Amino acid sequence: MDYIIKYVKNEYELENILNFAEKIFGYHENQFNRQYWSQHMKTHPELLIYAESDGEVIGITPSHLESDGNITIGIVAVDERYRKIGIARKLMSEVERQAKKLDVHLLALGSVESAEGFYEKIGYTGQLLIQSEMHSIDQLLELNPGYPVVYTNV
Image 1: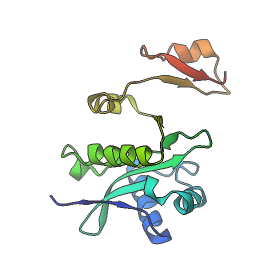
Image 2: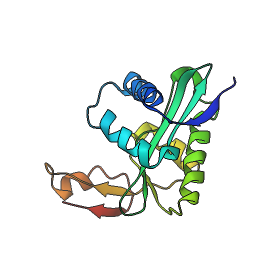
Image 3: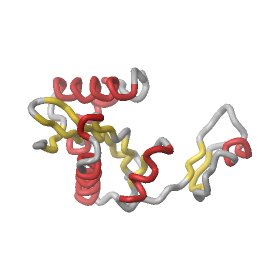
């Protein structure tokens, strides 16, 4: 199966990756906000990374450079038909390569529990970032599967 890793260079490609994200995760107004990602495309298009096969988006890792100099990976997603062949690993490697070019030393991403094994397999370690306006820190710590707390705004 042939595919290439690309960077979003225009609004058409941005629309394609946002449509792909919505297809995988459903509609999330905040996470897939076109204006938000369009702004990041203008400043760091090399962080809006996707995989394409025969003109079709098959995987994405849209990321952005934070004001603190770290990179946040928005999501990592690969079409079900193309999973388990190394595409997500290749996308993450490209994010890491771009991070090194930008002299970034911390990549942050949220993860569903079912994906934690994948991230551990490629060398990432889990940490707990607690952000909530609705729950106490004790309630949130009950959810902690043993990761160290690195930040809290609670």
